[in-house]
Image (cartoon, rainbow, N blue to C red; front, side, top):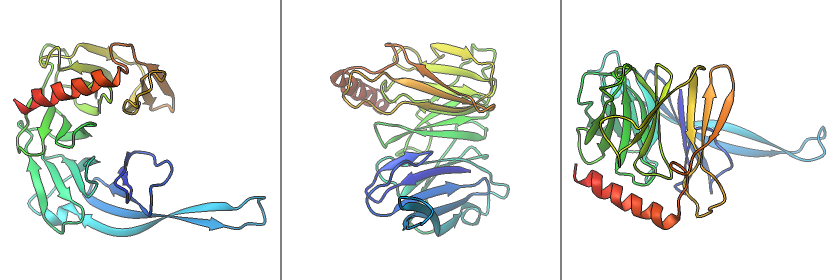
Length: 276
């Protein structure tokens, strides 16, 4: 099951929830059968004689349920594989499917899908990653090894990344992370347990690095976006199926940079993709 959270103040968290937003938080979950559930997070203050201080109880209250299979009866064997929320408006969700289509759905908009994005090739879509610095763009990883770049304004992919020179070029894409500090850099994990690093400022034909790992990687996360502090280094966190967690400090080439340069790189990237 995929889980994402949205606060009533418009904040967004993908994965574990830490802290609370103003008002009542909402968690959005998705299962493989295409059932999206919106859960309200309620925190209760409990007075207990057992403990010296009061304790808090966190409860999830089911607010509403959306069935994508009911909405799309033509997709008889629909399997949903991932969900991300729009970073600028948490009322909108993107859902990847085994048909390869990416569904853009308005969580409060009734029974209609806003848009359906096409895969460009006949392949199942496995994972999604929202652009961290613009709500207009989205990445999707596919079973055939492709990574598609989408604009929410266009049905078809703007760009398809595929390492044709690699011996594992057709290895299924399982995880994607878009660099929070380098707009052109994308980290991709495939079924062969390789992490591929794409830098679109250098090449959109093949990744600049491909790194094999012995342990099976189940989780891949990058440190948060640049906050203006030059002291904190950027890092990559890798979780494996044996329960181990590894934190890798990123080199200067892929880590944080001065905010003025970071903002200039964002402008350059947005200008680049607007011409595709």
